Image (cartoon, rainbow, N blue to C red; front, side, top):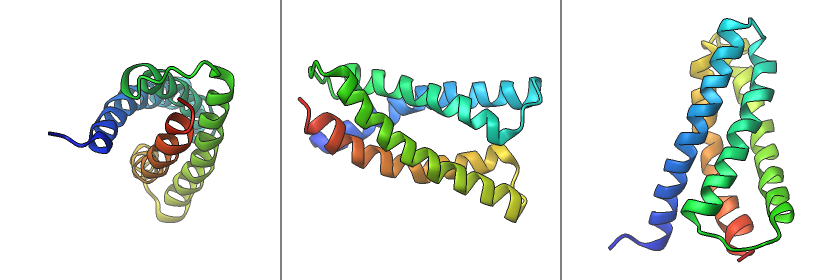
Length: 130
């Protein structure tokens, strides 16, 4: 049988995959169709993905019943904002210093930030607040 942490990780990846699809879709529309600079587009797309990720993980993955939604979402957002800072730094560095295509740079940044977000949210957002 799959261990609880492995099940949570798989669920987190699935929920995150849906949220990431929304994030990347909005990012692409803003950059490719509206001509918005990738750095600004990420400030719009990332929070949409983060909010979707919280809702899906709270309800479907961790099945968390804690009723202090705003407090819990606040912690999730703080973790996500730290992830955003790291995401922006990696994105900017890869594009401006190493010549990466912005979408590829965003994918690399995402892989790094997901590890931080899962660990922090698993234990701080959903485990401590049941």
